[in-house]
Image 1 (cartoon, rainbow, N blue to C red):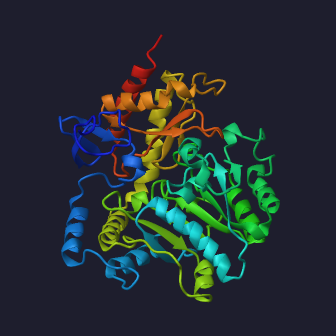
Image 2: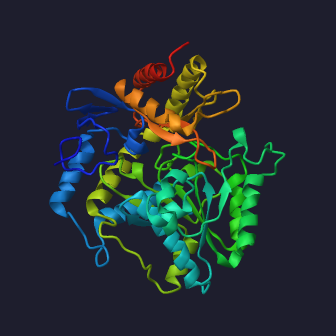
Image 3: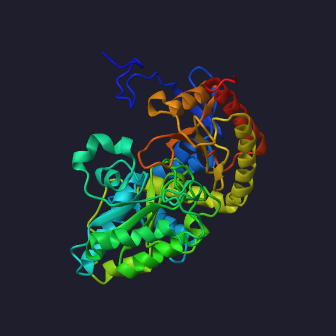
Amino acid sequence: MGTKQGDHVFYRDLHRDYPRLVRGEGIYLYDADGKRYIDGSSGALVCSLGHGNREIADHLRIQAETLDFVPIARFTHGPQIELAERLARLGSADLPYAYFVSGGSEAVETAIKMARQYHLERGERGRFLVIAREPSYHGNTIACLAAGGHPGRRRNYEPYLMPSPKIRLPHCASCPYNLQYPSCDLHCANVLESEITGAGAENVSCFLFETITGSCGGVIVPPPGYFGRIAEICRRHGVVILADEVMCGAGRTGPFLASSRFESMPDILILGKGITAGYSPLAALLVSERIYRGFEDGSGAFVNNYTFAANPLSCAAACTVLEIVERDGVLDRVIPAGLYLQSRLIQLAGRHPQLGGVVRAAGLMLALDVYRDREKMEPFPAEEKVGEKLARACLDEGLVIYPALLALADGHGDCFLLGPPLTITVAEIDELVARLGRAVARVFPAA
């Protein structure tokens, strides 16, 4: 009786021995055997302020002693109100309202539902299709998997997945349309109009995308003008714009909202992960005046709820995180730290031909591709599981990275993300890169 671990947990991988973590401090995690790991990916780009922050822990304790749970369908509470105000100030004047749920997948699914009901409030009952991009990942619920373009995660559940048209990622370095920017006239954005008109605009509810890609593609930053063109197309056809910033938002790329880097704001922007820096589960939808008024002038009620939505402990944790971010100027150091880490990774890639020569970076969100032939951009065969081998070698060297997919529509190929806590120092970056270098040498020993 029991698992390979000798306990009763149904683990994600039943054939793996998982190290048992016992504590965290700053960028480090410690297991039961005393081994120290650098959290080079902040979990899944979650722990933006590092581990073991006493100030956040104290505020959680105080909130738990004061008001632990609120049935949100009947009451509001102070931390929820304060958090919405902080997000309105830190975020964008174009997104003044906040709706809280308990995780990123919930938040994306809620945004899809909000877009659908917005159209219903306006009498447009035929709009239901979600257009998205491939490859992409937007969460693990059925609706999120349907909208996402992650073949491996979708495969087992295809019979349940509703139709969701896809366009390709705007990856100029390896254009899926074999065009060159800027002479392409943003073809990667223009194809959205073809999908909308092909499906019938009267049937299309929303367009969903990651502002800067995470686990699918790895830190692909669209070219100038891309989001402006996307907004123009969506507005012309009455399609709601949903920006998934669960991974790239909350300061990860430098500005608090990754969308602030570009030409336009979405109708609904989704935050998660770093919004509480990992200290409690929470996600948020930041909502435009237009969408809000659609509900207010219509039925006045959004048909949606979750038991732990706007949980006071999570909202209190997020308020403390945002207070620290503002007070300590955390965002001011994200881009300089990211540029330094990028420069060190470029040096590392120069010594290992299996690593992509270009290190894609947006603040402290960085990606490196892994190739069998870098010149031809030829990935390793999937059956070699090179990404998993590299992730395990990193663990052996005391480093946590985040394996991801290359920007290929068939979900083939490996890359990995680095997204350490936003508080990482130069010396800690040097230590991270040294451990990564040793892990790469394990997997790809010099001839």
